[in-house]
Length: 315
Image 1 (tube, helix red, strand yellow):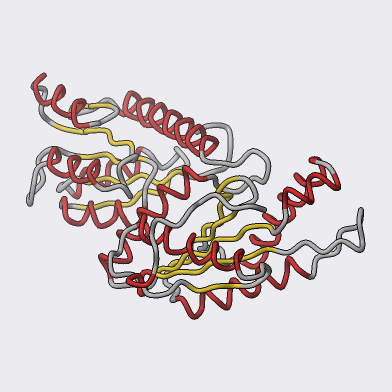
Image 2 (cartoon, rainbow, N blue to C red):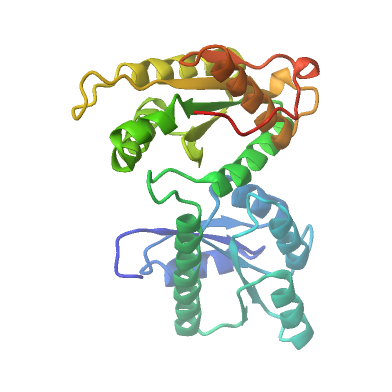
């Protein structure tokens, strides 16, 4: 549909099996993977599970209205940005206004002209891809190619909410390159940038595909480890530390670059919030820097952690 081979996922939520069948047939040449649901409850479950590129949503559903379903989609951080087109038999202008006010990107009335519907689907998908591309670029660090602090804040909040909701483990690892200012002063800023880029590469080499590796700022990095307790997260941090310490720098073969690490987990916290987890991990990192660098410190249980520990540290 857009000149590339990427298939888009479209979720159709309508209580008519005939509509499901018709749209599957008429949209089959549009490079789409089509998923169907007959109720709002099923549609919400699939929306959260699949995160489709587009939702075609009927207003009249057996368990709740499409308006209510759209409200729930927009209220959930995981699905808030989904593009939704209402496909409805209602021609009432008030329904159209309500749909747009709730966040729908388009409104198509039944019986619909298939050529028009295909064009509207193509338009919505193009717009959605552009929005996602711009949002992704806004969340990327230009130097390292990692996710940036803005992305970390969003994903950490989402991961904490999901871990609390489902009773799962969640850990955070933070890293800080030791004596980075001295390294910049001695070898120059271009080499310092190279070290940051290689640090990013080494973290990504060891991290799992589901881990979220970010540049926190300056010479600091953070890795979100879902479904991982502090014991396993500490092992991961040790692998990070060992890999960085063992790196050979061709420009300066005798140079050894090291990093310090802090680790914390929701299980160590009394207040299970993104801010508490971030502050707990940052405090552990500060302790690693204070007690000699190039090692891993695990956060103490929250009642022993000073959550207002300083975030600025000497390199």
